[in-house]
Image 1 (cartoon, one colour):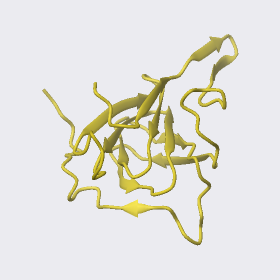
Image 2 (tube, one colour):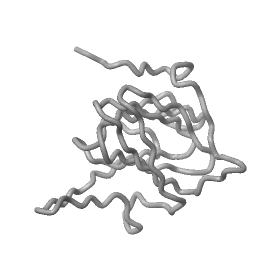
Image 3 (cartoon, one colour):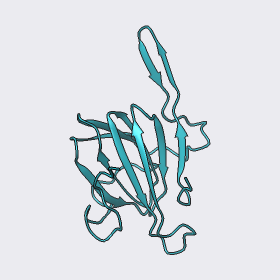
Image 4 (cartoon, one colour):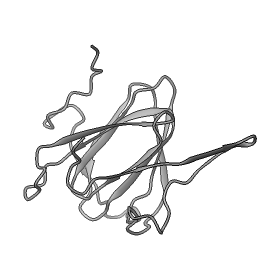
Length: 152
């Protein structure tokens, strides 16, 4: 798949043993790492779409650690060589990856599993409660994407 300009994907390594497993998500010596802002978790119930949002000042590093999601990214940046492009990532327990979403790129996700999903984000800036770095658009609106399941 051709990636939107600035998007990066890191395959996560799972290290299992008789006690359980360890998965390194993001390290400060990773090529994908920029800087640390904070770490937060969000969840969604089966079939729920959480979209669309973008940021002016931060990049996101998104991982689904429980369940499965479809992360969708849309490039609407005027000067971008990939303007108008959409990327889909099916990620979670069956495909452990981290997706780096650059600032000003619209993104959202849908829980495509049968249980509540757990999504970790490691943005490059801490959340500012007084002046949030959040741009929002409706989940089902002007971005040319259909969140419906694609059977066939």
